[in-house]
Image 1 (cartoon, rainbow, N blue to C red):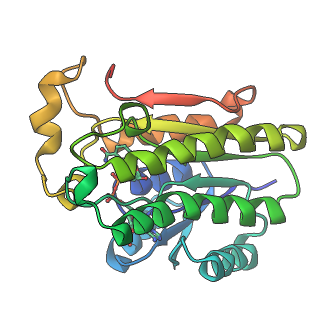
Image 2 (cartoon, rainbow, N blue to C red):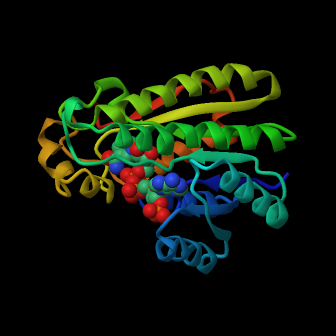
Length: 243
Ligand code: NAP
């Protein structure tokens, strides 16, 4: 069976590197985005230039109708989705909990966890055989991200629980569900938190003494999706330089 993957938030950062790596390994890839069509098209272009097969699809993955439209579009172009990477995520300006407004809290939970729930649900509905899901959580689910973004950390903690529970629900169907927990990775996300150079500031506190790259995270995601990880489910890989 042809490997067909959806990578949510696949146009930038960790999602972009994951889309590229999966395509190199022969997957047909749906590169999802919500705002940045240009970046998603760049990823698709680079995949096609190397002989791969991909298309971009605009969908807000916290919206059930748009998620279903994305799965329908992939079904039409490639057939059953066999692999899913729940990577889309947001965080906002570094704040203490008492400064976070309820609207922001709900947006973070919707974008980071409700999206994962909706995409997993759509995936399960159409799955016909063995497959795999990787949820992109964060080291913040372990640290709680105090003074920065507890809302974001809470969303990633919920994602970890969803990953564990779903792995057990789907084990009998030979669908594996795992998570990755990146630490400080060089992407645009830190600018959204109000500190573009955050990774450099924290590098000396990381045991490996540097930030990570999106490609290093993509390698772990791709491995978890692959047959090389055929006996791995309900597991998490920390990609945080030792933190
Ligand atoms: P990024 O460069 O800011 O990319 C975020 C991606 O999420 C973008 O492609 C964006 O789409 C997409 N997105 C946001 N809201 C969406 C929505 N409602 N529907 C569909 N797509 C949506 O961030 P990144 O660092 O690569 O983050 C990827 C994942 O890694 C996130 O889940 C993040 O929490 C996790 N992570 C990152 C780090 C780190 O240090 N960078 C550490 C731990 C975990 P557009 O391109 O259209 O805007």
